[in-house]
Length: 307
Image (cartoon, rainbow, N blue to C red):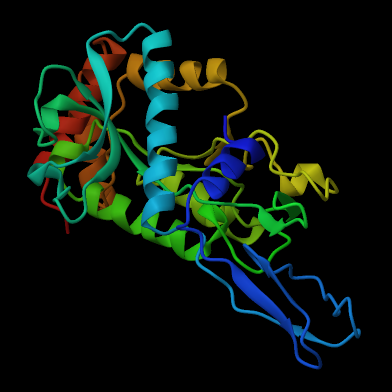
């Protein structure tokens, strides 16, 4: 799963990372860091005040690296679960679902046998929005190596789903996705590599409860490396409403994928007058099997004029 060594591997083998130059406002002392720590730090030379810019932690090379990592992890989980007729593909396009070439699915579980990246809705099993990024605060050492100076929530730059705008964008894309009838049986999962902000857990749980998103995931079992205080709050296993879940192992990811694909789900988001809803329920044959009752309810729900 995602860990400091994965991040170190990328940073040391690319020139795509924009380092912030942190400089003293009173003397010539300066150094570099991937992010600036939020805690006050004084100049090591004169004790003066430091200033810096805050680079973006997710640019195109970072996106490509993290999406490739995620696709390999999910492909392995898919194979481990025994779904030999399915595969994971990146940048999947489907006009029926508003997944255009400019707004393609970052990743999707699809049926095997289709060349290219253009699919029909019936050929897509799961859609993923990948919001992974660099999450630790790295600083160079004198010997040329790099080291972690702060965890995901102790530096100024916000990465992954710790960025509130990343959460809102993912929910917005999910709402557009869910506006299409053909998406009603396709799970939509947001994949990150950090916990979300505590203040946004209710929004995450609400979007999952409403059926727009099926789950927000973090693929980082141990994001707390430097400051391991308050692990229940800063590294939760899941949110109260279970909208967020931390995946700790490949076996756990396999079980998660298996559960998504094994049980059919239907999105039934709608707003009807109570009288119309009552008429639909009363018209159903409740002596049938549960799955048949559910299917009949779903079909009639979409036949009703929404007012």
